[in-house]
Image (tube, rainbow, N blue to C red; front, side, top):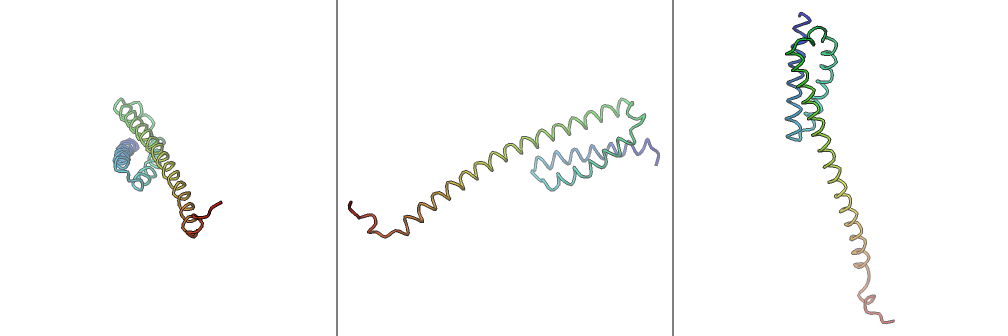
Length: 121
């Protein structure tokens, strides 16, 4: 395969993987996202090694810029999802702590005898 052909095939594969990442993020399919990122990472390294004179081609530059823009958008979306998930996790932990406290109160009350409530000073 000629170097030029390899560059264009790698670029097309990276573009496809970037779209797969976007779809995986939209569907919250993190296993698919990890797989796509792993493959894309390897392909981007190969693409950089093959770039050479093809990067001066206006079409290649436009497509590379779009690929980078899509990757930045995906990273931003993932960062936002991570922030929201972290906030939800914080709320779940707080609710868990409240339930633990309530359980301790109810356990203490349920183990006391009725006479404990009727004592007079």
